[in-house]
Length: 461
Image (cartoon, rainbow, N blue to C red; front, side, top):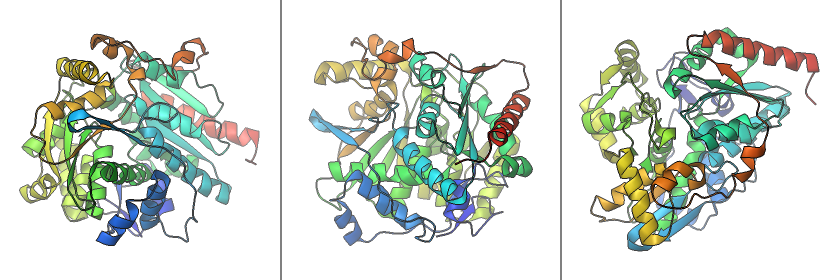
């Protein structure tokens, strides 16, 4: 299995090459040159697998055995079957109460495997809109061979999300509270990854859904959910995904490309970047990022759309580059109709849910089922009450409601406190990035300080 950039400059890369990368050198994202297709016998065999076994089986299709030997993985995914076909796929039973824990923990393990094997160190750069930062921190905190630098949008995450990042005091964790939104935070990080010498000198990588490893591992979510919901293998299932940067739904498309009989629906908040792609065939960026109850989806640049274009342009990197060059220059591009026709066969619909509707759905589920969902999950679950359910549906629950007490209260329920009560009593450690400051220079200085500090401490044991 070899990998390439979606824009074609780099080809023939190994899994290790792309795991330790952020953006490709040409500004694109990494993807496998081919996507393996599963036989019906594979699908039938896998239906009896545990979640760790599914992760292993899928990873084995994308990672050559010469690169990494068998690993034991131990994570739990649960399905909450509520009446009337409201199947809530709970992906948030990890240490930071978010679905990203599942993918992050596996990717961190893969990173640690290669770093330890090669006697190397890396520095992770992450900008977060909510859950990504805390999950990334939790996956690598205390690791000798990994430092992590996280930029969070101060005041635009929930207080719980922010505390999950600022209360981590391990020496290898470096958190910045920035006076800006998540798209603005992405800019200095992309600047860093655009500088080849900087990346190689400091061994910089990403752990958000820029990283191919995240997409690969998250594909297992869809196989697991499918087997829990389908009734019998081979029957179609529709999965409704709350969507921000489109990494999670890209993983669903990857699973479908491999042969899983699913279609997808993208639920978005009023920052409707993905909805504009699916419903209008236009990838565009609006100037304003709106703050919503579903804060992890407060994004205007859904960068994984580039991976979707690559998959449904039949992996033609020249076409992807032409499309993305226009987007990078003008902030908007019409996606060719034949690509959209292929994409729409898988992501069949997208819909927008505002804050009032989020609260209404949270309240309705609580009153009818005595069950509490987070605002992001409510975005997906809104579809349950709007559309005819002609096939089994799964609704992706991306985070615990414990992280969103204000929204839970607005929905008329008592806030959930399990797993978060201790945070308010912990000391905090972070630095500021104030509006008007040169964030790239601040980030560059931190990267250099991390590398210098590592050299001062001597080689890793």
